[in-house]
Each structure stands twice: as C-alpha cells, then as structure tokens.
Length: 135
Image (cartoon, rainbow, N blue to C red):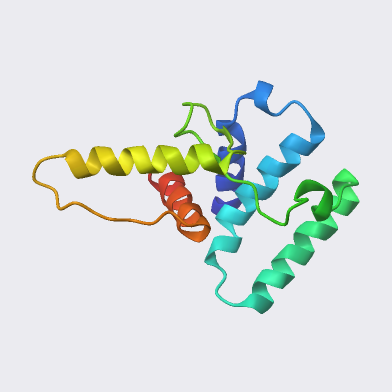
C-alpha cells in the first residue's frame, strides 16, 4: 500500500492544467509507476513483465497503447527543477543546459573539488531520478 500511495503522491504533485488530456495524464501515471516500481527491478525479464502489465492496463482502462504514449520508446521524464512546477520535461536540450549550469555553479563554489561530468542520456535519467527522490 505504501508504494501505491507513492504513485498517488506523484500524481498529486502535478498541476491540473499541465494534465489536461487523457494522454498527458497517462504519461504522468506511467512515469510514476515506473519510478516507484520499475526502478527497483534488476533483470530484463522482470522489466519486460512490468512493461507488459502496464501495456495491458493501458489497453483495458484507457484504450491506449504504450506505443501511443511513448512514440519514441523513451519513458517520459517529469520534474519540478526546471520551471518550479512538476511537469513533463520534453526538451532534453533544456534539461542538459540546466544541468550544465548547475555543474558550473557547483564548480565555482569555493572549497569544493571541481567535477568534469558528461551529461549523456542515461546519466541525465539517473540524475532526474535522484532529484525526484530527494525532493
């Protein structure tokens, strides 16, 4: 029950005006389910089973397919660190620029060892997951 509560807490973080269509809301719901449940899975077989369950649920309850929700096969990323409201981050270039700016800011801080990080796609996804957990 605690995990289901976490999914609902994530859904409630988003502003209603950002979730004005069935597709937008289901993208948020899928994102929250993947963050709460799928991020803990360690092997591909379990991930495939989970994805199948999500696909079946989408089809039966929302009459949508995962391909319709994720046309590019990339899971949606939601966060509140770009604009202050919990919303889908659709422009990865904006997110990458935000992370680079924060890294520059960190590296200018006196007393901290400068870091030279490369923000590739998987690194960005992991950073957004960590930010979600600590916020």
